[in-house]
Length: 437
Ligand code: EPU
Image 1 (cartoon, rainbow, N blue to C red):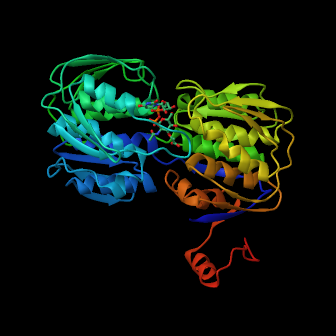
Image 2 (image 1 turned 90 degrees about the vertical axis):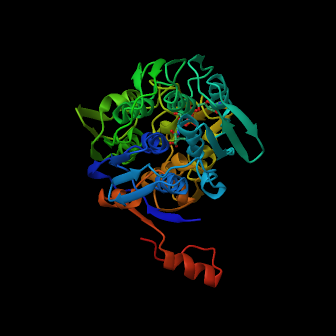
């Protein structure tokens, strides 16, 4: 368990170049299995989930070189080995190795991704779609073992626009010699990024990426390729929200504003000034206005991954806001931690009533997933006094150098050092040290 210390009350000011997208690069790492040549990726973020993805590729036999943000994957030695449990269990995206392994080798074995702090997150849509493509599964409580003598041309309709299921089926369809049509697809930019990558590798021709109907003509010839991972829209939104919460001014570089359309609309509605260019977003002013009703929705709707940002800003805004979480049933558990800081949020099922007008104060709080942990850090930057945020390892799954970046922007925030952590364990201390920041 790792933790950070934060002292609130400072405005964030400056510029940040956003990291490569976590949710784009993770499926691309599994799609690299399809390429028996060399895949070179630029803009790969140095985050815990990427490290797990790389270890999975190594366990399958890939040769990997990783320098800075450049990753080179030599796929010649890849074999359909079972994905080791100790790696697969650490990241839900490990299930995305199923489709590409089935497509290239006709065999795949991955762990069952368990439930997690944001909801149950089943993989029924992934398996239903793969079955329609011709795969057969042996399922145990721990593992999913799939086989497919041949994947076949088919039309599949997804019951829900699941991001992961769409990506899984697009990758599996690359192994079909012929056309596969998927409808009811997720339209998230990360699905589009995966399709661009697959086309760049040459394994398939893909039409309709970014729409709800995607057609994949698989069976192409792979070639060594170099691909740039797009900027992370959720990390960009996270930094913008941090500035909006402290009334600061921030320029976020390396992100296309159209990917954040609904999020930027929300910041404007809350009273922030937004300027955009082709690959930057500038925000200034504090988010002060309440929003009577906001619901999360699949893309292009307001993203569930930005819900925690809204909850934090709405707590301090003037007047009552209501938020409905429609994607992940357990994501509002963040409210309980924000209430320790004085937010006063009332949660009933998937609906949160945020009275607004809170003067947040420092507290000891705990994040239970990636986005809630980073939201608590932002709330602590807005609050009066000092806070301790536990569970920082969740944030490190998806944000590169988060505390360093916010500290450069003027925030008083730092991670507890290993030395501090060890000395506390030795002395069996549970209390915080006297000098924090
Ligand atoms: N669902 C099913 N069955 C399935 C798959 C999904 O019922 O087989 C349900 C889920 O339980 C959920 C809804 O469909 O209620 C949407 O889930 P989806 O499959 O779209 O999400 P995902 O692919 O598991 C990705 C991101 C999430 C992001 C969601 C929604 C990655 C690695 N993860 O998850 O990102 O919240 O799409 O946009 O791409 C994060 O970055 O913090 C994060 C959780």
